[in-house]
Length: 317
Image: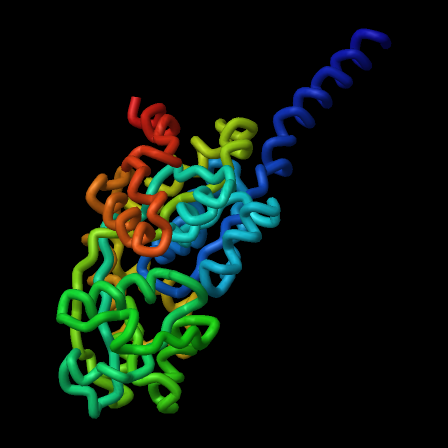
């Protein structure tokens, strides 16, 4: 009788050990700041099951605005943030230990949307323009547009942090609280449909949807991050080759989805996605130069500082 019992026990152990991975998916909490271009590939990767297929239980969390994401990452409330790329550099200059391990996009298209009475950028002199909290991307883009057209951002306009989200800033323009703000797709199209004016469009070399975490997390969870990045590249490849399926995912994330606006978002985003997740040095430099306007220390940083691309190197190999 002993031998059969031993065989049964051995078989039971084999079954339990092989079943464990099905019930022990590694948990990752990943935050993103807005319903915008840099976030879209993460939605598709999650909803189409690419992370789950590789044994990861990824929770995507919308933390409106980059100002909320950085404290969450530094405190360990989330493991990864997708975006807040300017904020990551500023935090590191102030002593944080954050690291970039990849990037979703190396360029973004921005539109300056204003009240209909504004007919030129010179008409913005003396006006109030809406931004997010702090020296965020919306502020940086406004500064560039104004400077490129001969206005002094420090004296010719006033900046007002308004709205917790880009949608809130769009509403502030409609209500007359501010006269303009910058937006990525699809909110520029939404604003124009509501009677606002798309005054100016720019293409910006910049980081979008940067994949940011902490240096200790990389050291302690390298294998998990390799899996995360591999699945993310699969999700990206799926998104750029499956428009209709991706649009169905977009519909899930937007309230009151507008078919034309989401198609506009997809068409603007898909060609920009960095399939290999690697940063373009020009895009990194553009962010550093913008930060240097307020913090000259950023001028001393190279395009490689605060990056750890060894994970992507390993995946490529």
